[in-house]
Length: 241
Image (cartoon, rainbow, N blue to C red; front, side, top):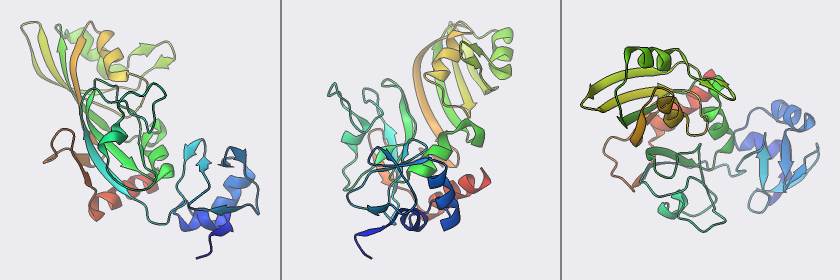
C-alpha cells in the first residue's frame, strides 16, 4: 500500500464507511487533516497525518485496536495532560496512537475503553445512540422515595434535564446507600451531580459496564485486549445507531 492515498479511500479502508459516504463527509466540512478542513482530492499518510471526523480523532490505520482498562482512582482520563498529572495512558503499554473513549473523573474507577478507532468511540459516547453505562454508586445520605422518582424521571441541570436513569437500590440505611445506576448520556460529572440533586454525596463511584462490556476478571489498574466477539458487539451497536 502506498504511503500516501486519497483521503476518502483511506477513510473507507479504515472503516468509516463506503467511499461515497466518506466523500460526503469531506464535502460537508466534517473532516480535518492536521487541523485544516479537508477537501476532496487530499492525500494522507496513515503514519504521519492526524485526521479528525466531527472533531474526534480518527486513526487511519486499517488495523483497529481495542483495549478494556479497569481504571484506578487518581488518573486523568485523557491522552495527555499539560499539568503533567498521571493519565490513564500511563497504564497502557502499547505501541501506536491510542486514546480513551469518553471520560471518567479522576476519582472515579472502573471500565474504560481504549482504542484507535475514533469514529466508533464518538458514536459510543453520543447520547443519541443510547449506549448504556452502568455505575455502582456508594453515597452518604438517605435516598427518599421522592428522590428515587426524580432520578428515574430526569434531573434538571443548568444545561437541561437529564434523560431518566435506571436505578436499583441495593442498600439504603444508616445514613448510607448503595445504588446501581444506568445512564446513556455522558455529561460532565453526571452521576455525581444527579446524586447531589437528591441530597446524596457520592463517596465511591465505579463504572461496571459499557454496553456489552463488563469488568469481570479484570483487576484494578489492569487492562486486556477485547475479544473478537466483544469487538463485534461494539460494531453492532454502532450499526444500530
